[in-house]
Every structure is written in structure tokens, then in C-alpha cells.
Length: 549
Image (tube, rainbow, N blue to C red; front, side, top):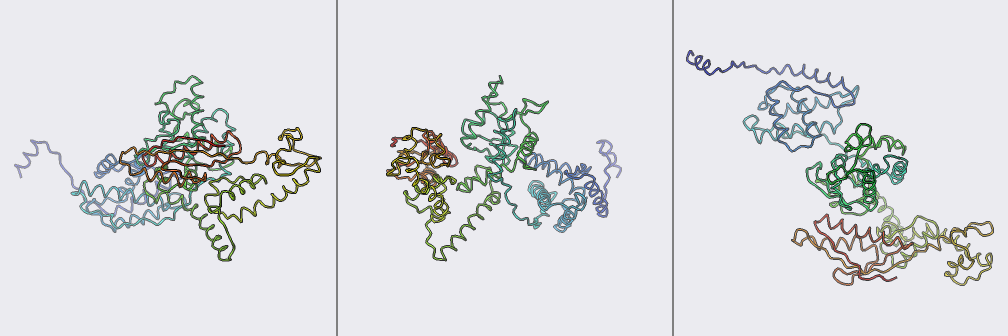
């Protein structure tokens, strides 16, 4: 004993005091934690850092784990709460202790009369399960058995996507048009969010992230970079915004922030996460959409991609989801609409009604429906609407026939009213020229209005285009080339009454009303091809070899 004391004094080993942990203290800690929660409402409570030898191990876990900033904050808060709940050593914890802690969380009041939501409860359990999995793997001497194995999450019904309707999106665009100083900036912001970018991804984007067509996101939630193709409207919005910044004398470089703040005191700085929320709130006020938030645009964009008929696997790639369960909420509304239509379709067929669906229509029938819709002032029927095949020929006919009949009655009375001989429909189309009056100015005759003049003038035309498409694989393996070629044929070219002439050679029929529409239609078609190819690590070479009017 003396020898030990001399050794201790010579090496100056400090005295160590062993303290037995008292589990009776847990109840006191429960009340203290509960009181801290009740004192702060509407925000995550601030939990004091434990003065505990176990805390450095938690810090090691947080530092070594590949967590996003927000996830790390959540894990830190929940592990602090757990340390405050029990002083039991890690090796002594059992599943029953974790079950008791789960019950404690379920009864925890976060505000008066309100307990933790199931999602928040599951987030807390996720933090604990992740920590103990790491602890058992890297420090088995401290925790040889994972006490969270068998700990069940609370079942949470899948929430519906918080998508905006087309009418609400129109109000958003109109609200942005009313913004003066920030109009161009806000237009780019909403376009990026509506292409399913997260707010944090928009914050991190630089000018160099945009190549004129695609936005490359490097700082993502799952740490995996992704490429997001922008629509033509989105591309133009970004180009106009950057051009305006250069005109104001800004030295725009690839490292410059893609979107800037206009807030006093931070003007010209990178738009922050909270700045995005503030800007969207202002837009929501103008659009009379209370509680509008940035993530609603992401939901809207994801749902729109599915309704466009894009493969869910491609949608997951575009919006940055790894697990198909994360995308499931966006498919619910789309599948519900399809189920309703399938029910009524089956009901009509069970009643022996002869129904012809748009997908099976001939080219002449399609053109007739398109012409009827335009001549009667109905919403235009575009080729992709007909290709979806979810609406019957009979229904489309009935929706338009009444207006067409009224228009034809008016046409029959035109000769005697105008004193012009009309032998065939082509003569009706040339009536304004015969009378020497421009179609736009000839809106009334003898006090009556004839809007069909404009409809007849703007009759749909079409051109035949010969297109050559070549798909190349970036990986040089060549495995995706055939898949991309099939998707281009089945999802894009099929809208234009495609006739396959040979390998990679096609004859397309493109309908249009005005000549300047052809370039827009072709541009959108090529953009969709490039997007499909990018998703499979391929690229497309396309060449128009002939155009026949």
C-alpha cells in the first residue's frame, strides 16, 4: 500500500472518485426537461449540453458522420435530450429502457396541450438508433449490444404532396410581374424551385452552375451531385437575369452567386436560406396565397414531371431522391386521377358503350378534334393530350360538336349577309380578303359578332420533318443507348405521328398555327431528347435532313 502511494505521488496521478449512478434521479431530470420545453413554444427547444463523460463520445459521432447541417443539429438536440433523460451507462441500456424513453417522448408537451408529432418522434428515434449503431460498430467495448434493435417507429400516413394548382401558379407568375426591383430575380428563383430544387441547393448555386441549359447542383442533401435540366422559359429567365446584372456593371464570374439578395444591408450578397423564404412569403402575399413556402414549388415540380409521363425512376434522379418511398407521395395524386378515370372507363364499357380512346385515333381523327377545338373556341387539344389516351373520342366530340354546329349555322348565313358566293369551306376562309378587310378588323357584320373569322384564319397547319437521331453513351459501355433510343421514340417522337424510316431516321408531322411556333416546338422536342439522354449518361446528336411544307 505504501509502495502504491509512493508510485502515485511520483507520477502525480490525480485522485479518482467513483460515483454510483442513481436511477431515481431520472424523474427529476424528466421534470426539468419538460419545464424547459414548456418555456419555449413554436421553436425547437434549446437543451443544455450535458456535463457528462458520455458527451464527448456523442461529439465524436457527430463529427465522424456524414450528416447535413440541419440533420446534425437535429441529432445533437435529440441526443442531448436522451442524455438528460437517463444517466445509465451505455452498456447497461436495454430495449425496455428505450421503450420507456419512447413513451416519455410520446407524452412530452412541446406547447400547451400539444405533444410531439409522430414525425418529430420518429426523427428523435432515428438519431438515437443511428448513434447506437455507430457506437456498437466503432466502440464495442462501451456498448457490445445495440439496445435499439427492435425499437419500432410510429406509423405515419404518407402526407399528400403540397402541390400548387395551375391556377395558383398563374397567380404566382402574375405576382412576380408586379414586383419591380426584384422581378427578374424572383422569376429565376421560382423557376429553379419549380424545377424541384431545394432552397439550400438554390442558395449554393453559382453562375458557373448554369451552362445555358442545365444547372449542376454539387451541394445536395444526399451529398450526391445532380444535373437539373431547365425548361426553355427557365433558361431564358436565368439568361435575362444575368444579362441585367452585367448591364448594371457587376463583374459576373463563374464563382459569383447565381441569385443575389436585395435586402437592405445585404444587397449584392448571396441570397440566404432565410432570404428565399422571405421572398417567397412576399410573393405569396401578392398572389393571395397565405403560408406559401419554397418547398411547395418543389412538390409542384415533382408532381408535374410525373403527370408529364416521365418514368418515376427519372423523376427521382431529377429531384434528388435515392429511395422510391420518398417519391411515393408525389405519385399518389397522379395515380388517384388515373384510378378515377379507369373506373369511369370500365363503367362505360360495362354498359356496352362504344368508346374510342384518343390513343387509338387515326391521324385524320386527331386533326379533326384539334380543328374542332380551335374553331369552337375550346381549350386547344395538343398532341400530347391526345397521346395520353385517357379521354374518349366520344367525349371530345360531344364537348365540341355543339359549338361547331352553331358556327356552321353562322357560316351558312354569311353569303346572303355579305353578298359573296361561297361554294366551299376554302372560300369562307378567304372571305376577309374578298371583302378587302383584314381578318383582325372584320369582327362584326350588321351588328353581329363573328369570332370564327379569327378561328378560320388561324387554322392549324403542319409540316413534315425528316429527323436523324444518334445516341452515344458517355460510359463507352453502350448499355444505355438502346434504352434511350426507345424512350425517345415512345415518349417524344410518338407525339408527331412518327414514321420510322430506318435506324435512327424518322419522318415527323409537326402541327402548328403560326410559323414562329415551329422553332419553339422543335426546340422543346430536342430539349426533351437531351434530358432523357443526360439521365442515362448519354448524349444525342440530332440532324434535320429535310422539311416539306
